[in-house]
Length: 474
Image (tube, rainbow, N blue to C red; front, side, top):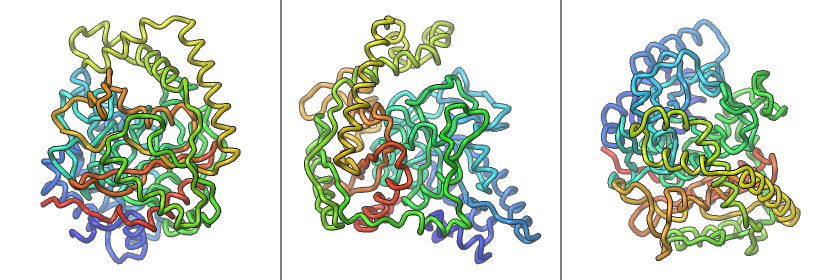
């Protein structure tokens, strides 16, 4: 049973298709592990174990009857508690929705189920996904499997921790200012922020929103690519989805060929800090990654796009989005919405038309400079997070290298600056601090280069093997 939990998703998918193991056995193993070691981690907060076991039995019967298995046939997954799941409680981490049960699945949930995935439940998130530390009044804090005294990051922190703890083998997540990448970095797993529109969103509250995206998380780049192949592709209900379909995979094993990439001669822009304060332990842990890329044959040079203006634009658009999404809740339920969401709504209410106009102009200027940068480089390598996983009792990072952080989003700038570029970005395991805390490397590719970027990340992963280091949970 332990071996099944340690296997990655692509390996498990092969075993299931070859009938060397049944979906019942795979799901039962993961349920048993969740019940044994999952409690202290607090990653899966609404469990659907009985339903999962029943669906596993049905999956085995379908395969026995000769039904063609989906790409995710029999694989245990979980869904972020921001994604609606029909018939399963979805709280958004808010006491106001502590008993809310949606009637319709989000599109990412629909696609995973249609591909044969079996959900074990919902993964924890901060209230309404606000912040990169997963704690809320409904379920409390999710803890880092590598050190239970530390945060798992966020806002897809429950997903990252569940993967690291080997409770599931795939997870969905979402990313506005780093919510797929930051927790992946903190938990030694892989989190991929795809190009806006690559994974359609439905239902949606804002048709043209390109800052917030949904995407895949896994323990390996191949697992993430497998899940992206399921999640990606247009949907008639999503008018701004990218038209390009995902690569056709005859089986999960096909991701190996999909990720083959000769990285020799690849032009890599290396930025140790993106012009931001970074903890010395993070800088020291990431430093060897530059040599790894060089040893792979990449041409590495100190360089980064000029992202000036990205901070202001991000904060403006984020605040405006919070007003639209949560302004009525804050106004209608005084004192019942947390300080992070309330502050962001207040910031949004103070915005003027000129503020929004200026943010649009700043974003356009960033986009032009990013285009110029990628005319000379094929990928940008930089930190995912400016800090290592911090104390789980701390609400947010107040200081980095003596530089005060004024708000709960300041310390996430290394992620949210990349959000403002509109480019695909991935967090891949890149080592551990001297105290054993995971650190991820952020790789950023040109526009809509999602599949090529996954191939580059896979080459780095294969050369390092950090993702194979398992947390000591018992």
